[in-house]
Image 1: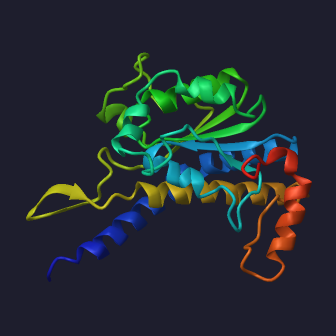
Image 2: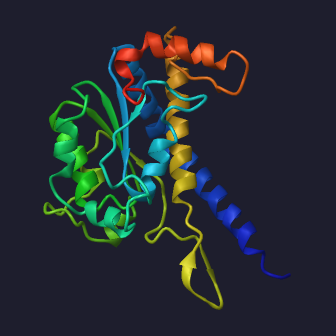
Length: 251
């Protein structure tokens, strides 16, 4: 039997990772969903942060159909994507100390809010300090990271610690060090990263858990509808007005 095609191997690898996360992280995902529900019910706000490609799962839960209107992206300028020039600057900024504190101090985040800090490696100064400073301000911090990096790499933070060491809840993506699922004869480097697929699924699973938890408490989740279906704009306008004091991406 011939070896399966790389595309099929990637799908198999991603599905295996998703199933492992579902099996091994289900309890913590439920805990994270309950934390989000607690914040919503108490009148607090939701924030998500990620740098580089870890910003993609953070952005994926902000202002989207089927998502919570209250989820806000906490941006650190120059780190949220490949639009910064040169692109390598974003990676360099992740290693600079002090940025996280400055961003949090000028943000609307306050005690009682929930902050997701997403970092695959969790080893750079920016996500570590984001978690440390957020907890000092009284936020509940949910880290989404790969625990494998804590034993397979060294921290780049002066404390020698990783993101996972400074979170109230840690969700492990199970991604191996290097974030590449495939190898192939004739190709020198491993390829086909799956971290975005898995981490985005974790984030959506948490939000699904939060919606279910709120419904169980008799609270309507503050969800957005697609603007491309009839009545979507009207629905979203009502939600935006109702929760306007907790939504910051529209200002």
